Image 1: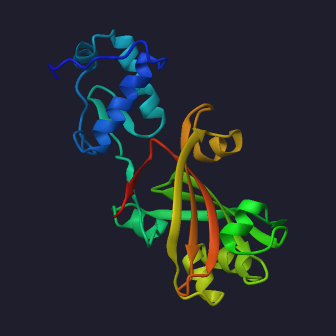
Image 2 (image 1 turned 90 degrees about the vertical axis):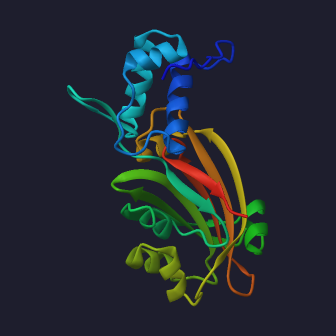
Length: 244
């Protein structure tokens, strides 16, 4: 920890926030492994040429987010690294999370029927105004909420999907029950925004924190669209990996 790292004080981003982002990057890259102890606050402060109060605030924020944990008298440790979340032809939350030795879970937090707007109608190959099933979900890894999803389906094709998802807790199994044996990812778009108040409450985020927004279209084995999803991911808890 002797090498100094320059802070961009003219970037319009608080110094403590820049330090917290650096720590998250180091953790995601494996340079601070899960369970590893961080260097002392004084060492980090020296590296960034800042005071210890600034470092303490950066660490406090990451501790509140569940990324770090403070052990009284022992120091600060990495609680958990961000989940590596591959975006590819087969993107399945449960498989991704369980494959990283974490326990996935989730639940439906709402459902409704609404008319298709122009964007979703085109994505699902239905007429504008056609009735769609809207299903809201919360997905969790090791007890920590990581994403909120809103998915739309053609109600005429999947009239029993809400009940199937409520029974199984899985879109893969629910679609199987509705006659779709498998599906793949056709398209993914990734943007970022500040978390909405309702999502902040579900994800345990502070107002103003960033979320990754992943919009996707899934298709069945004959390339017919089955699902359009808009997912909001806690940016500090998930690292997207784009597969070639």
